[in-house]
Every structure is written in structure tokens, then in C-alpha cells.
Picture (tube, rainbow, N blue to C red):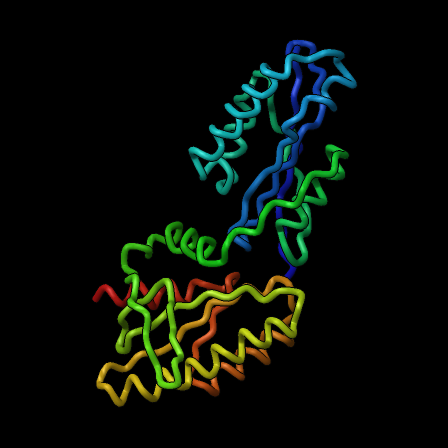
Length: 262
């Protein structure tokens, strides 16, 4: 998937009144992917190359205060107007540069790391990939539908098959929502998809026999795969009574969940 985003450098100066700053981080916002995040170097080594000795304690406090401010108010990261106002009003040690447009292809996390390396020139460890359930929970919260969801009990099927989905909602049938991440290891991903297909087919049949129709809804992160692979997975799951939604197109699922309140 290709999307238009905006990025900015994060800069630090021990003497902001001199108007001399050095890049210490990067920020990226991609509205179409509902993504916004930043990376800041926790070491003042790069700053010291320009300004000489810098108090590590002072640098740490300044960076932590800056990060805490952004994390405490998500709209500063996600909302363009709020971000620009926040940037224009900063007059202390850390500031943003004016944001620039950038094309993002594939993973926005990888694009942020690329921007960090370009702007700061210091390789950092890749961030730990958050669990897919946590990512989906955050999307539900931002969409305002999390309170409409259930935490379903595990469903036991014949042959010892057990479906333990983290979310569910009632909308004609009971819908178990199971998120998956499609990795670059397509063989591993195919194993996960095949298991969901079998689970979905069995769930569809046995739940109707028991008088409580239940469906499996899979939410997939396909950022590491192509459109052709996504369509093949969608068709395979559909033939097994499994509904598929992708992370970058969740509005239809949000609307179904909102409809469930009625």
C-alpha cells in the first residue's frame, strides 16, 4: 500500500537563543494508515559533537518531558493542525522542524526508522513489534467502538479445536474477532490462515447445530504482503465462512460494531 505522509526532524539545543540546533529524532504521520509516531535518541553524543560537553541529566530530562507531552495527548501526533500549533509554540531546548511531505510504501514503522537514520545518522535497535491484539485494541479505542465489544469465553469445537478470540460483538450472529499479522514468512502465514479457515468452517456448522450462530471474523495486517496475496487469502477464508478485514480498511467493521448497539 502507498500513502502520503508528513515527517519532521526533532532537534535539540542547549542554547536555543543561538538558533543552533542538531537533529536528535524523527517524526512521521501517515493519516491513511492511522499511524503517527516518533523516535528520539536517548544519548547526547550527537549534540556534544556540535556543542561540546552537555549535561546528560539535563538532556535526559528534556527528552523525557518532550516525549511525555506527546504521549499524553495523542492528537498532537495524529492531528495535523494540533501538531503544527504545538510545533510553532515551542521555544525551549527541543523543537520540531517544519513538516515535509513524504510517500510511504509498505510499513510506516520501517519508514520512520529510515527517516531516523537519514536525519540523525545513528542506528537504533528496531522497536519491538507490538502484539497484534494490542494494535487492534488501540484501533477500536480510537474509533470509539471498544466499549461495544465483548471479551468472549473460549469456544470449544470437536477434535479438541479451541478458538480463543480477544473480541466479539453480536450482530445477527455472534462474531468472534481474531487478529493476525501476515509476516514476510509466507509459509508460516499460510499455516495461520489455513488454521483460521478450518476453525471458521467448523464454527459455522457446529454453532448453528447448537442454536447459537457464531462466525469467525479475521482482521489481518497485510502490510508485509502484496495485494494478490491478500485477495487469495480473502477468497479462501470466504469459502470457509470466515469474514476478513484488513487493518488499513477497518471502517466497514467499525460500522458493523456500531450497528450492534441497536
